[in-house]
Image (cartoon, rainbow, N blue to C red):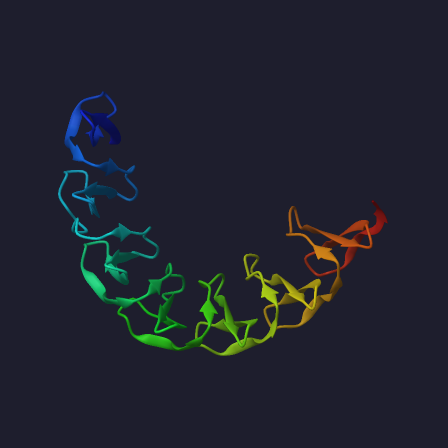
Amino acid sequence: LVPFRQDGKWGYIDATGVERIKAEYEFAEPFVHSQAQVGKGGHSGTINKLGKEVVPIIYDDVFDFKEGLAPVELNGKQGVVDRNGNLVVAMEYDEVGEFDHGLAAASKDGKYGFIDGTGKVVIPFRYENAMHFNNGLAVVVQGGLSGVVDVKGDVVVPCQYDWVEGFLDPGITRVRKDGYMGMINRFGEAVLAVEHDHVGPINDSLALVIDKGKCGYVDANGAWVIRQRFE
């Protein structure tokens, strides 16, 4: 089924153009995993391909599902619903991020921590900011500096950097400290010293490194593949 618009309202038609779900919604998103987000009366929810409500159309916003769970927002507070539309985490948080490895970053009373899919606090709310997990590791901020924790809440990289990109690549992340950039591994060890003017993201297994206007490339282990001889 795909969305269509008629008389200012949205519904769904099949591949032959036959209306399958009546055009009665203020907006209608494409179906993803047999559910689609729709809006009615200024609120959001989801329906299935029979047009039946799954996530009740009562929320101010419904975010994308990840690992079978989606944050929802109502009156400035956020909670979490499952794919059956059940509210599994109470609407008590200022922000809830996407789930990864069964955990989501959340904020409450100005502090960030991590909760599981039942709302249980797994990593205490003690950080100034927290990003979602990538490859089992998440960037956190404390004292204005960034570090990394694992899914148990253990600190694997102390909060000592001005910026940590996050482990988009399973093994390394870019970091910045005192105006210089480098790369560290998942144990916090420098694979490229934090002494360069610029380090670009890894593309095709190579990262651009610039110093004093000269460019070269290193691999994911920080070894020079092309020395800095280009401008």
